[in-house]
Image (cartoon, rainbow, N blue to C red; front, side, top):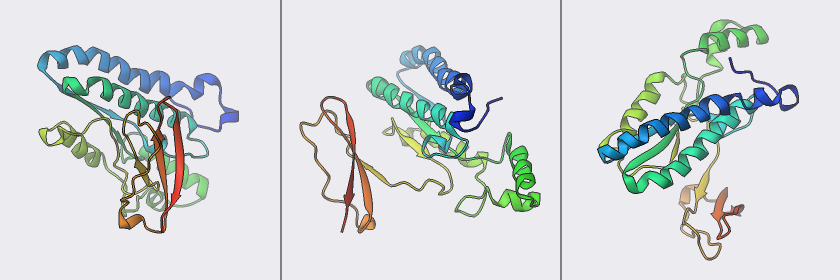
Length: 212
């Protein structure tokens, strides 16, 4: 299986394991499916990549690398395929109650000296419960539906509120100068907002703006 750990503890192969498996896996599946979608006049490509793409952790670097690469690939692919009515999006789930979840709960209970019930509660999202596979399935069905026909190139965190960042993105292609949107929502008053501003030379800068 995949190995987690700190950068100084991992080999190159361990660091790249998820890129070789997950990222290349999505690339290969997409390459195989795209010709059929083109013949059909459109389609949907929905990638699942964990929330490690959005945050850092003590031992989550390999997962973060793989999932961030999936999001980057999906965005590039969405730009290429949007005119062909093939929509590409990514869903970011947290740790779900599936697959290795029981083992993760048991390991946390052992390491912290707590009960299994107490350990499971530590995986609960801000909504007060563990995110379930059905939560992800519902969003995937929506993204595959006609109601989502204008959504492409997006990464949607279905994580029960775990993600803490607030990012407003000025996504105009090749603007001639840096510009900041002046009509910020009142909900972000007196907060620091990050703007990612793409320039003509394709370099991306991050600008923090204090809104009063």
